[in-house]
Image (cartoon, rainbow, N blue to C red; front, top):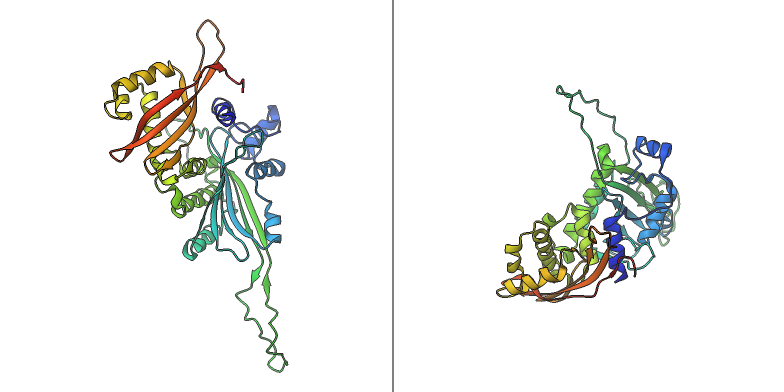
Length: 368
């Protein structure tokens, strides 16, 4: 369950820790340049961006085009400085274009989920290309009039993206291959020397507070990915802040993802019920007449905060979810403790509910 401890650390702390000093004057400068994430990490810095690529296990754009690969991709950082996912649309030699979603490795380099992949058709591929036409261009800053009532407006916890368009060499479609002097002799059995269009690499790093073009391009890629990935069709976008968050959840689920997506909807309902302390509604989230099961569940979690991972679809009607309960300690200064929790879910009236659950023994937080 080390992966869940790491999830808890990310939830309670600052997420991915890149080796960069963002204190003092440096922090002021990075925000003034529009390059800082919520933790002041300079996401425009080339070394930091390489660390991000390493986090996802992807190659540099230069290596892609050298291998004849074209890729349009975006890396997403949430409003708390945590790396969420990379969404890529890729065309490799001899392979149908595909979309790929990867989630970050854990800080110890382990527990990266298998990438989500699906082929994309010509229409969507051309839409992706068109959407990338201007993402790296800068807009003139709009001068907004001061609000008459003197209201100050802030953009807080904005997301950050790093977007790239790496285009491999292609035959130039504006030149008719084989044309030239009418008097030139040419062996018609030999291939023509086609005029090639050079490779190109464009990139931009931008925060959502900047109101630029790159963020729209990046989130557009995520929206395309949602449409292209049948594995994620049963995940409800309304349960997530945005498309990258939903894609991350889908990628981190496992097994039968059609079942896992339906189970994910149940988990959102469970977490909302626990957060709002709607104890009377909890009984409806258990098999049958669930009053006793709900009472036993509340006694087992004993006021702790429940953190759940993404579900595993075991088959069409069964799913399993693993997580941990964090116990904060009392006013007398007890240290925080953690316990593992497993939920076994059963489909009932076409929705998942809790069949059985198991809570492990408590241990000091971080002891894993």
